[in-house]
Length: 462
Ligand SMILES: *Cc1c(COP(=O)(O)O)cnc(C)c1O
Picture (cartoon, rainbow, N blue to C red):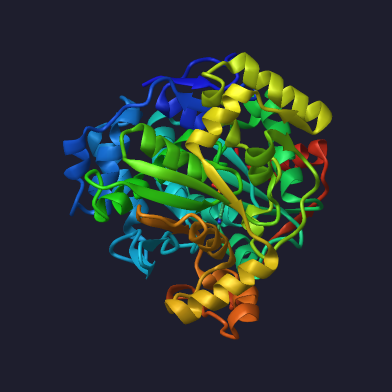
């Protein structure tokens, strides 16, 4: 299996190389050269399997010879062993034909654990085998960073630096990043927004001298291995509702477009998905883009669903690559235009492709709170604000095909919003009940590339 860049100018890599590299050297994102498919019988045969066995069968064709079957199976087993639910990704029913996929039973209570725990295990195997050391730098709006730190803490061949926007993550998210005491963990509070964090991260990757000197590796949602890990639960949930004999639809609370892009990959692999619905909060650049055909930045407004407070939706580039018939030059041109003018217009043909492939909706802050309150009454479920954004948009797209909304975080990760909506303050699961008593360790950093690079040089182990 070979991986190519969405901008068409970077070296073609194997799965293992693409995983360790993250962002391609031409600034693009790696995607598989071709998408393997599963036949109807192979999909039907997933019914009743453990999550781990299904994960092995679904992901195996993408991995090539980067890992042996034994290595890959053992990585999957270790990745999901720490989850607090035997089903890993259980499905509950909200209403007739509307289901909620609970993706928050991992160690940091958000869906990002599905990918990050697996990546941690795979990095460990690959680096130990080659006797290599890498420096992982990640940018986070809250959940990626905590999931990355949880996955890489204490690993021998890795230093992990996480940039988060100072004052713009929830207290639970912050504490999950600042309380691990392992020496290879470095939490950095940046003076700026999430997009600033993501921009400085991209700058580091584009500064090849620095990138090579510290062995920079990326685990942000642009990392193909993360997208791949997220493909699995689209299959397991659809199969438990009758796929491949019955179609299903999905609504996905969306920020960086990684999670919903995994749904698109599941569809390309042969899973019968009717609609894939993008749900945005008030930071609705993707919904506006789907409506108007222009991707246009206008500033991020902090919301009660902070993990979706994003304007530069990195993985959308992967969708654009397919929308433009895999023309890397066309994608590179759009991205250049965005850098210089803050936006770009999408061609009519590409827009038709996008509207055939995705639907979209936008939810205000008030509607998010109302949905949390209503759902508590109607089904008894306590939703985190991100999941509530998904549920609200899904309700507007319900039809004859069963709808699955992705619940991306546990309500206890965002207790203020949930309490404001329902009067109930959700408690942390017992396994992390002492989070508020642990000591914090964090470095405040300026929004400045050379200062950040100097800090990474100084802090990392050699
Ligand atoms: C990261 C995140 C999202 C957005 O997912 P993307 O893959 O970036 O679109 C939604 N909800 C929660 C809770 C998240 O942590």
